[in-house]
Image (tube, rainbow, N blue to C red; front, top):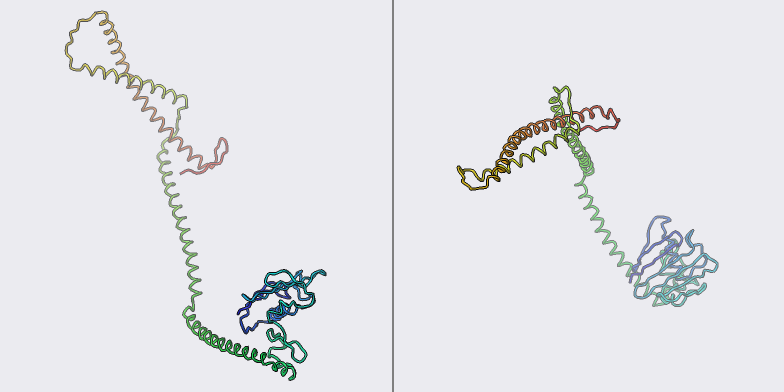
Length: 359
């Protein structure tokens, strides 16, 4: 069953996690932490003394070995004088065994065997002494180790498992080497792709530049059209030597007079509508009191006089309306000419305000 090992602040290891599945080999460059990891694992099951292995600058280190459903154990040590080695098994209460290893930890089965009066760790081989199990020990130690039939059986099972792992690894390696050859051949089909990508990137930049130039050209074309229109307007105003703009009071008076004339026109139209009601009547015999008739005749005389005045007023309205239209046209032309002159000058000659060009 896989075993998960977690180490924090142990020698060069800041925070690492590794999964051990049956026979596991740790490889790497020098000073990459292989020996530190092996010492961290053995520290859990040996309760290593001292504090030199605690990472520089840290106050505590911690190593946890998780056997999955079989339980887990966590070992920690600190640099303080009052800090003691602490064990926690299966998330239980902390245990402080001093320099010993609690029996609950030894129950996991990660223990040394005695051979030649020395402890030998078949489960955790150090980097430089013990890669070949027991062959670096005297013959008496080897004989003592294999004298136990159960031990020999365990070793044989371990050897078979390691051989099976070796064959599986060799088969996987063969497949991966073949994959490398295949992928390298496939990779050749992409030769020059970097150059193509660089060309595409350059084209993308060129397309963006062309788009910017196109927008600039459109803007210049619009400005040119506006300039041509301004020049045409300027040519129309060229014969004008002087522009007289009516003041506000005069314009207001003209508008008031037009309002009065329009009122008279409305009254005339209403009177004509009344007269139209009696159109076609040639003779009308009515016995009436002469006094009201005289009043009516007098009113008719007044109405006839008003009618003449209304016709004159209508003629005056037309004349005043034409004069007002001409005045408004002159005023608009003068305003455009003034705007063009101010735009050309760049600022108002009276107040000095900066002016923007107008289309």
